[in-house]
Length: 68
Image (cartoon, rainbow, N blue to C red; front, side, top):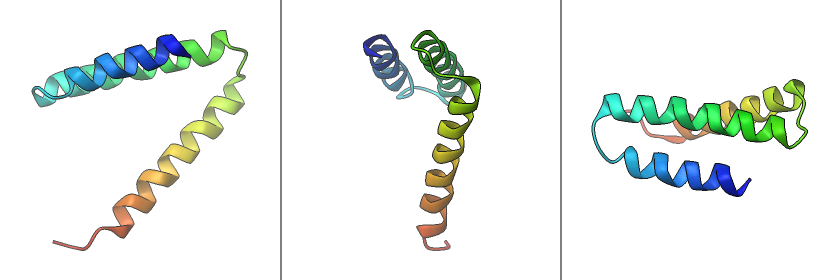
């Protein structure tokens, strides 16, 4: 997991630039997290549960924002 955190920090630093770089950084981060989870014994079903929880959190965050 330490490797995933380091990758996440690198991706976060990369996201402070342009939008295309952010998209690329997110793809790299996603692949890195997935690979790290699989190497640590997580099953695809568990990774889907994680992704579902992340989507739920984002949905809640978006729903909490006032309309502009």
